[in-house]
Image 1: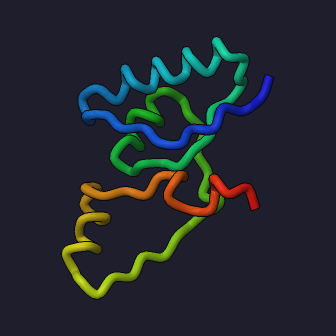
Image 2 (image 1 turned 90 degrees about the vertical axis):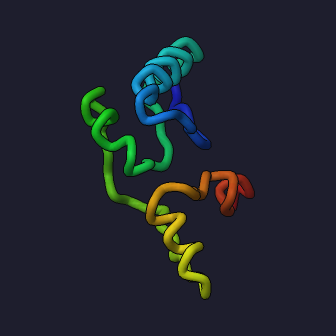
Length: 92
């Protein structure tokens, strides 16, 4: 009866609905009453269509790079940070 924490979801935009359905099903089978994780802006519409509740509380991050192409890769969605890339896994 707890919350399932999602570390990362990777899917082709055309298949994200099926991936989310499977995620929600597996979480429910394990006894979760909610699923929590970071939002990938590319999947905002499909999450909304599935009646997901979203909020703008942290964690936020600041990205700075001297090479503009690195920044562009994050802006375009070609590169992402998952919860495993930061301090989340350290349990502060």
